[in-house]
Image (cartoon, rainbow over all chains, first blue to last red; front, side, top):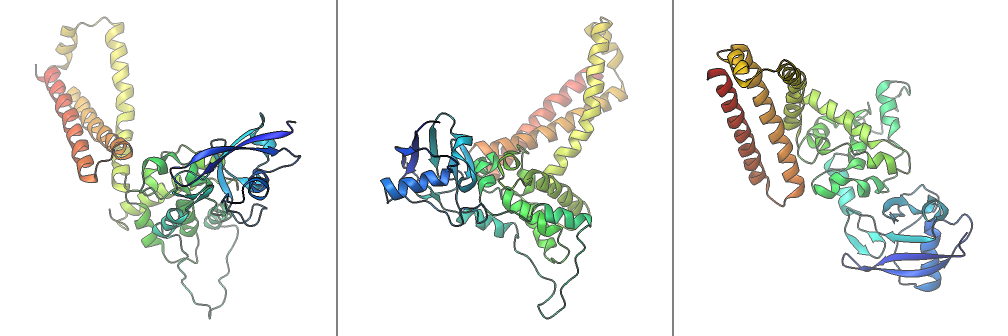
Length: 240
Length: 109
């Protein structure tokens, strides 16, 4: 094992640059540990975002040696075999400062994809019984563990090329709700994702499912949305 | 790409798939049997079947390719949607014109 890592970190906003730091290498060290070391021992002005440190909150995603990853669960030994790390903010999003990307466009697209649950009952009614073994429920459950880290969005070529594209996370969320029998917003949702920038813009490159830290498969969810919106269009339920 | 264009592109792909296979089979047949241009034109001249086969083929290609080109322009050039649509329609019309002209040449000549 190298005793020291050469770590290049993005400094500044959109027009910033990489600066290199020397960080001691340790056993079981994560990329987030490395960033935290720089902030606490070398330059306290370094900005980055994290919260839980255990892969639950989804706030520490960054670009690590060219690929978007959740840094708290990415071991240095896995991605920096030669002892060098290049860590930048997530791609396809504006840079606020250093390693912190502005997630606003990412969550705006959740709204555009009608990613909010549309209830059909009130809190005064009894809890709806949901059978866990139906086809629809299994499809909903498959993607419900998304932690909104933005890794899929940063990895997506179509997002890079098409600013209107809703992206893998928003569309996967839409697919979850399409399959939720308690939700009543499917008409508007299918309409929203059948237009330009919706599911049909996806090229199925599958970077999203390759890099998703939760091992979800947004590509499959988007393919299913393509079929569902085509059926709705042919039935005259949606128009473009 | 919206759902309507997606559907047109997939539907024309479904139409083209068997036509491409038949087209390649025709090429193999013509070369293996050493058919000259005159031999081929003698078979295609006045044929409603060949006119329909390649006429449908040309129209499917024109629609399919122009939607694909529209997608590429949308992702790679900073043009507004109206201009992209105009470019794609123009490209489709050029393909259809050239293709149908070729079909007319082998069927009507």
